Image (tube, rainbow, N blue to C red; front, side, top):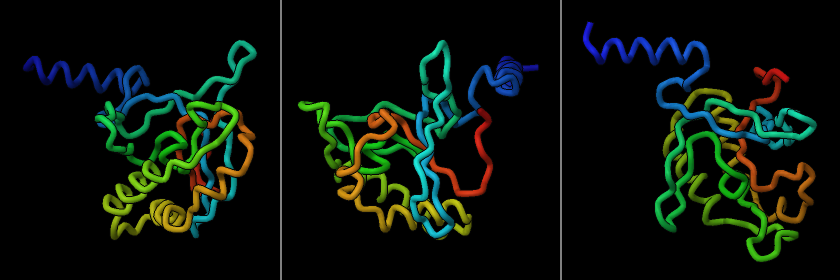
Length: 166
């Protein structure tokens, strides 16, 4: 057996134990799931944090791999990101009590997914594309931060599909 084959086998054994993420994924701290209808309508924002030692903490999930963001050009992650990219809103850096729109980040997230998912027949991915096509960040910026996790990482879930265990 070659060294590379042995290393690959070891990695696969670790991945089965959730000690390392599957190839192409990374473990990230995720606090919120956006529940979409099959038509792409935002149905709910589900707080998926876990309670540990009496405090809500983000859930560690395997998601498509993250990377260092280069410079000032917004570059989004695939199928997940923070609210600034996913919903186009984030906490104001100068006044933490205010919510501001981040259209440049949202447009980068939207354009990336429209290009990557063009022609998909998957129901969940079509719902995501419909959501992105109709979402207006300014409507959310006026809402209060009900979840206290405005700057958190977010994933998507199609209503009625697999749910995360508590």
